[in-house]
Length: 258
Image (tube, rainbow, N blue to C red; front, side, top):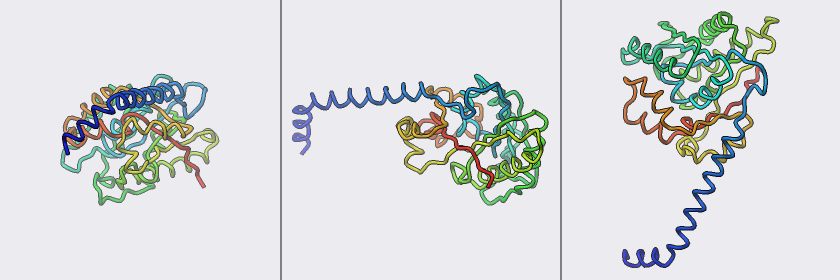
């Protein structure tokens, strides 16, 4: 059987070689197209103050890095983390790690919430109103124009991520009642299915179908950002950085209020 397989390879190696060349050429072409069509979710407008709302230290590096790296070139970015990730008793350590990551990613300001009513955990149900309170205070303090967060599925399905989405959307509803925030908008990071989530750069063709997307073709950027979170940088998160599409591309949709 093995000899027959080797004979088959030898007979068709010419076609296999051209097949690999064609495949690689298509991938390179897709990457170049994707890079050329980076879309700013806010269009060609003035410099904005954009706030990312996340649940835990390292969410910014694991899930939002392509958007952060792209938007930081044009806009002022702010980061609000609704917990210090104290599930394993490492809250203070993770706060310092997030400070380091936020500096690396060029956030103008970072706020980490340490509230007993917002505990890190898969079984923790966070108050939508309490999250909205922190978000509105952060928006007022930094004159934020745009909010970016998870969507209703939270990328990984983590209940804390999902709570941050609902709380941030509630904050937007409250803020838009004020005349000065009438033009404020919120964009959510689209959750993909399991297969697309873990095919890395090969998800580029499907990602291009979205109107609002950002790309990062340097895996070392994601690796360096996650390395700031050294207490969390275990083997499966290293694999996540290599294989997850979220290390290479982000797709967003505007959040409706109805």
